[in-house]
Amino acid sequence: MLPDSKQELLKQIPSITELLKTEAVSQWLREHSQTLVTHCLRETVGTLRRQVLADDAGRCGACHVSSEAVVKRAGELLTELTTPHLRKAINATGIILHTGLGRAVYAPSVVDSVAAEMKGYCTLAIDRESGERVERDELVEYILRELTGAEAATVVCNNAAGTMLTLAALAAGKEVIVSRGQLIEIGGSFRLPEVMAQSRARLVEVGATNRTHLKDYKNALTPETAALMRVHPSNYRVVGFTSEVESAELAELAHSKGVLFIDDIGAGALVDLKSFGLPHEPTARESIEAGADVVLFSGDKLISASQAGIIVGRKDCIDKLRKHPLMRAVRVDKTCLMILERTLQLFRNPDRLRQTHPTYQMMSTPLETLKARAKYLTDAIALQAPSIQVNVGEGIAYLGSGSMPTEAIPSIVVSISAPGINASDLARRLRKDPLCVFARIESDRVRLDMRTITDEETVEIAQALKRVLMV
Image (cartoon, rainbow, N blue to C red; front, top):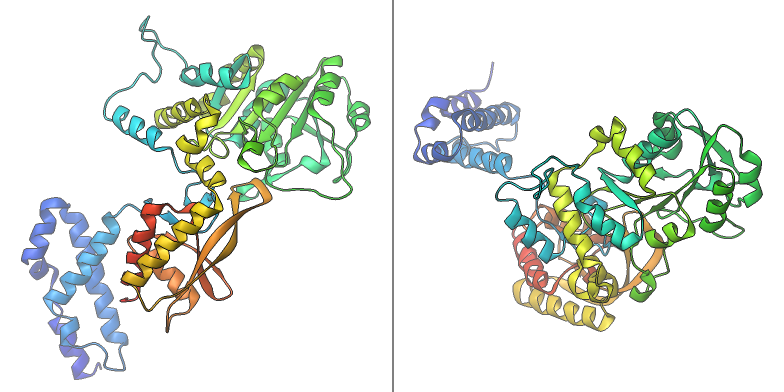
């Protein structure tokens, strides 16, 4: 038998019919379906019943089972279910291309242009002159050819798909020679040998993990060889006693034996990163000039556009890719192409990338500017949340997302702590705040890196701190 107090509380819980007649719920029904609203009410009532039954400490009282209390809780659930889970966040981690936070920030000019174009139909697969159907990837081929010097280009949904399509179309049933030191594992634990197996190309490993020589490739060539493949280690580094064969040498060897040279340059550099204070990464144009028949790279890392795998190279090779049955399975949609084309336009003027492209802005922002940003933030915190303890110091930012993983970028960090709240809880509260602030934790303090936030966001972060202290 239940105690009389629990039985009485259970009786006081309003029925779904009663709740549907309340003014607040009636307003919900003007905007949301009755199915969704009823679901929220039933979930709330069910949870409340379980809490009453499990309450042996007398924490549940009449105030918790009133209509007002139930409607309030159901409203919170309704808001949670109708708020998009994929939403804007503030990246204060110092990782510029943060995979968990959507990698690149799109350029404002790109966002404004795409938003305007998305409000109607678009010329996704049709020629304006003839009115005839065309392949959608041809819409961006012109600018990829211009930026890379390749004869032709196509685009698929990501670089792993580009690898699989290229090998399936150009090397299925035949051998592809790859250095052991380049058999990478990409995000989600997918490994190059596994991707290659799905393409039905046969992997031939040569060399050692740290050293591979041209003679290793020569000795592995057979009549069954379709291609030599190089995979640039953009998401890891092997240092110390190492050596690898240059692209030009591999291209020369491949062509002397009548096979293809496929070059996966990974992160997709289109400009020399030295001008942004980072080590040089091989560019797509350099690979084409070195003699690569096909070059593969990502569209959402150093290009910082939509997620895509970009394939450039010889026209006959690209034509085979377009005709392969897998092409339909890995093709991209109109939003991807719109964002990609408009972002590629920015690379026509590399000297202005610091002003036009958020990723390159973040890479190259001077420390003095970051110090000034830190001052804005600390002043705003002092005004909005004076109990927060603040310290400003030097820190390290990273490019992220498998791009130049070992290259540290000097930065300025604002470290914060709150009385009575440990660092993990403070960081969690910032993430759960409507502003959705992601920071990092070091030495039991929450650290906000100035390289990945904007001046405008400093005031918003201070306001978020004020809110989380009231939770």
